[in-house]
Image 1 (cartoon, rainbow, N blue to C red):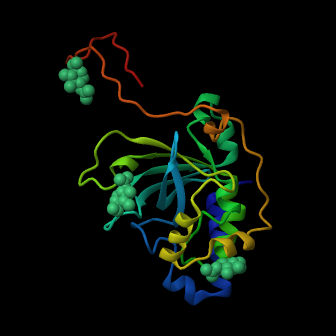
Image 2 (cartoon, rainbow, N blue to C red):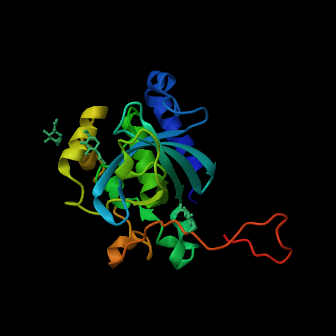
Length: 239
Ligand SMILES: *[C@@H]1O[C@H](CO)[C@@H](O)[C@H](O)[C@H]1NC(C)=O
Ligand SMILES: *[C@@H]1O[C@H](CO)[C@@H](O)[C@H](O)[C@H]1NC(C)=O
Ligand SMILES: *[C@@H]1O[C@H](CO)[C@@H](O)[C@H](O)[C@H]1NC(C)=O
C-alpha cells in the first residue's frame, strides 16, 4: 500500500542504520521551515512557454499518506523569491480526479528517471528510496505566483501562472541543468545513471496536457458586476 509516511520513515531508518552521523547532522527539514521533511530541487516551465525555464527549490511537508505540499523558491535571484506552491499526490489519488482537473497536473516519472529532480545533501540511499518508492509515481500541480517574465522585478507583478514539468530528453536547455549542478555540487548525468533501476511509469491520461497540442494558461477575468453586502440570499458563490 502506497504511503509517503511509511516509505519516508523506512528511508530514514535505512539511513540511520548505515550513516547515523549523516542523518543526525542533516535531518529531513534541515534546510527548510520547521516541519519540512523534504528539500527538492527540480525544473518547471511556464505552461505554454517552453523557453521559460525555472529552477525551483521545494520545501515539502507531508499532509497525508497520499499528499505532500511544497512551497517553492526560485533560485534565479538572491535572496531567492518565494515563487509558488506545488501539491504532490499519489498516482491512485490522481486517478480519482476529473479529466479536466488532471490537465492542470504534471507527471514526475521523467523528472526522476532523468535525474532532474534531486534532494540535495540527502544520503544517496535515502534519495534513491524516496525517488523509487514514493515520488516516481506521483503527480504535481504547481502555480508560480512570481511570474517568470517578472523575475527581475522589485515586486511580484501580475497574476500567477500554471507550471509544467519536463517529460523527455532534449526539452530543457542543457546549460540550465549544468548551472543547477554547479549550484548544488551534483552531477545530473551520474544521478540519472544511478536511477537506471527505477522504471518509467505509464502516465495517467490528462497529465502533462501540453503534450496534447493545446496549452492551459491562467487569465484574470474582469466582470461587469458589483459586489454587494450582505450577499443576496440566493447568490451563487463562484468557485
Ligand atoms: C533577468 O536578468 C538577468 C540578468 O541580467 C537576465 O539574464 C534575464 O534574462 C532576466 N530575466 C528576465 C525574465 O527578464
Ligand atoms: C558527470 O558524470 C558523468 C557520468 O558518470 C561523467 O561522465 C561526467 O564526466 C561527470 N561530469 C562532471 C562535470 O563531473
Ligand atoms: C476592470 O475593469 C474596470 C472597468 O472597466 C476598470 O476600471 C479596471 O481598471 C479593470 N481592472 C483591471 C485589473 O483590468
